[in-house]
Structures are given as C-alpha cells and as structure tokens.
Length: 587
Image (cartoon, rainbow, N blue to C red; front, top):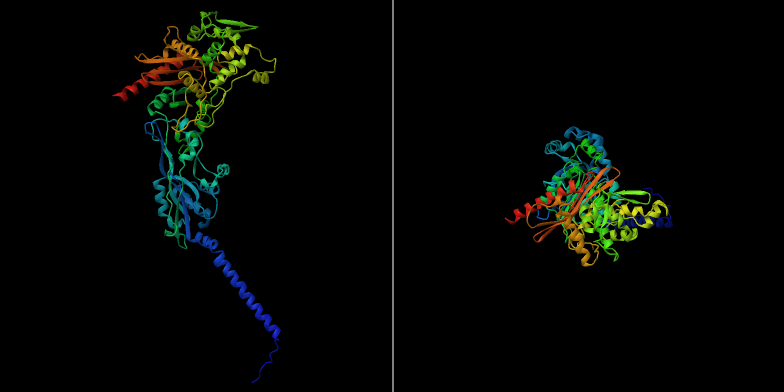
C-alpha cells in the first residue's frame, strides 16, 4: 500500500490549528454577544413580529355645569387603522377599502401619509365609521390583512345649550401639532388635544392616560390572544371639571342674543363665578368633531359676523358712558372738586376750536354729579376735566383692571387699551394731540378700548367695593389674585347711590332694567359708545340684590344704538328669568 508523504510542516500544522480555534472563539464571542449581551435588543425585535402593541385613547373628562348637568360628554365612534409593516400592495388595499365601505381611496392614502410614524405603529386611515361600514369590513376581513378598526371616544354635546366659546373644542394631533408639544410621549398622532376654551385651559385634567394592549399574532398577522407576560394597561379617563355655569341661565342668554351681535355676561360679583356667558353669533359646538359638512364649515368661516371670534374675551370696544363711574371716582379724589356744584349742559361744549356734543342735543340744563350720572350727561364731564390730567385718569382705569388681562380661565384674552400721555406722544407725536383727547376719554370714547370680560370684572369690583374675586368659569381651589381698588367709604357710597339713581329716578337712563318685583334691587349704568363702523354700541352694566343673593350683569349689543333703549331691557329680561329660577328652586 502506497502512502503519501506528509509534507505539512509542524509549523503549518500549528497555524491551521490556531486559525481553527480563532474562528471557533470568534463564533463563540458572537454567539455570546447575540444570545447574552444583546438578548433584550433581539428579543424586542423578535417580539415586534410576534407581538402587536395596540394603544387605546382614554376618554376625556366630562364638563359639567354647577348643578352636575353634562355639557360635554364622550360618544364612542370607530376609527380605521393599519399596521404599515403588515400591509402589502397598499394601493390595492386602499382601493379595496374604498370599494368595501364607500370611502374615497385618496382620503385613505392622504391620512396614511399624514399619520404614519413607523412600520409597526398603528396608523389612522379614517374615523367615524358607521355600523354598516364595520359590518362590511368584517365580511372582507381575510382580504384586508393589516387593516383594523377600534373604538374611539369622540366629543359629544348632549346639552340644550351651545356655550361654544366657553367650552372650546379639541383638535386631532397631526405631525405639525405634535412638533409643538413639549412632551411628545403624551400624545400620538390622531389623539385629541384641547385647542380652545376650557378644553385647552384644563387639558392636563381632561386628557386622561392612554391604555396599552399586547396581542400575540401568528405568521400571517392574525391575533391569537393576549401576551401573558405583558399585562394590558386599561385607559384612565380624564378628570371631570365642574363649571360655574348654570345651564338655565346660559340657555336664557343664548335665546336673548339669537340673531344679534354682542355679549351678555352674568355672574356672582363676590366670588367672580360666571353663571352664563354668550358671544353672539356663535357656532354649533360639534363644529370641529368632523361631522360638519364642508359647505357648512365654509359658511361659518366666511360669515360676515365672524361667529368664531370670542367677543367677550377678545372683542375690543369703546366703553362709552359705562366708565363714567371711574371718571367720577377720579373727580371725587380731588379735594377741590365739589360734587354738588352744577354745570350747565346746553347740548354741546366748545373746547378750543372743537365742539364736543352731548348725546342730548337739547341739553340737560343744570347738572351736579348725581344728575349727570343718571342722565348720562357728557357736557358735565367735559367741563370737569380740569380737575385731573390724562395720566391720573388712566391710572384710575388701570386700578379697575382695564388695559390688562383679567386672568379669566380661557386663553386668548385681549388686554385692551388705556391711553396715557406717553402712549399719545408715541402715536401722534408730542404736539399731535391736545387736551381735547382727555374730554373723549373721560366719557369712554377716543382711544380707550375694553373687553366685555374686563367690564364684567369692573362691575363686580363696584358691586363689592373692590373685593371681588377674579372672574372664572371652573370651580378651582385657588384663583389668581384679582386687583382690589381701595377707596374711602364715602366715595364707594356715592358711586353706589348714583348707580341706584340711574335705575330708579324718573329720568334715569337705566330704568328699563328694573323688574317690577318686590325685593329686587338693581344698580346700573347705560352706555352708547360711538364707533367708526356704524351705529353706536349699546351697553348696560350693573348688579342686582335679591334677598341674600347678588347677580352682576354686562350687556353689549353691537351697533344696537341706545344703551337705555336696547341693552337695559335685555338686562331686565335676564333678571326676570333669574327671579323665576329662584322661585322654582324655593318651591
């Protein structure tokens, strides 16, 4: 038998053995790295194929009125979703969805791109599916791999009131909205976020916490049950919030302002609680739920009366005569001023080369402070402006909250404008304005601009002699600190007495605000504020004492004309309804 001579040297043998052991060690190290060190990482990757993570949206908290009646609820609806990693031939799938449930495939495709965040993260395709559409999806389930549906709590408004500018609305979180959120882990695409009104202000209370469910799936992506070692986490509903609103008063205000433009605010002066508030015109509160037709949305968006604007919070108006109490306080602070001395009103007053008119062109005759207040005489205040300068008057306005936010618990509040000498110099130049501007500002005209919510706070401060709390819509443990103007008791007495005279005197401009009910005592002031966009705005502010309860009110009717003729009777109707509610509650 022939044997081949072994020509491999011992050195080569050792090299071969070394290489073999090196490769074995490399493989062992790699196995150790994969199986031990990288175990968690690769287990998670494997689980993405084996386990499907489904998040469920938590129902938002309810919004209730002060008596527990529901203003905003949740209504379960269905959303259509897809797992991108399980989809094959997306265009074909979207076409099949369109054919199955009658939904435009371009909408499905657009939503897929809009909400896509990853291959294994659920992506929304459509929402508000009907029961008939759900049934069709079930019938074609085997042909729609990767397509799912789940319940989604949508905002629902079961109340008889709209209160749309108070309650606000929610919006769907898309990529642009999510980019603005600080803690992005709090929201997924398609979640709802408070975007306006109380929904926005109290978002952290209302939103709740999402639930998480883990399903085990087979190689075809079919669910075969829960994952035992990953227990489900049920969604936690958001907290309910109780508002200060009274649904009966709110309904009354909405009915009274039907077909008009303006604002009514009613509340409790001591606590700052708002019982009812309407900004007219308003809109249906379900406007942003996606149930409104496109043409309806466009009609609201392009409406000339701008129903989307919250007038009581954002509207800026000249206040007119309703701020004459502030001018009167500024006068009373001057020791040289005598409120009993009469000024003659002849219907107009010439200051320099300008003539300033009174609302009564015939004139009021001899007027002291009280008669000037109840008659709302402008000339009296024109002739009294030499007792103060612009900055003194501006300071008085600011002491009652004008020119600054009221801190109401609804975002987007306007600050208004209280002109000072510095402001006038910047706007018109040092010699571009004269003391004549002070005459207009003293009667609530000129550059002075206010919001109705500031006026509401102002009347609350008058009613409580400076101790009212900050206006608010939701009952909370601690309110922001309100301003507290501090004046001598004789000044408060004089102002309150004059405001009562506005209502009870035969010549009082606010006498139409008094209901003919024993024990119901109204204090108030009317105003007719001129503006450059048509007829004057009609104002009424005041409060009522009814046994042991007080109610404050602000009425503004845009381009309504006379406050005494238009706004005061509306206040009387509101007070009459309050009396009826109190009587019914007492029975």
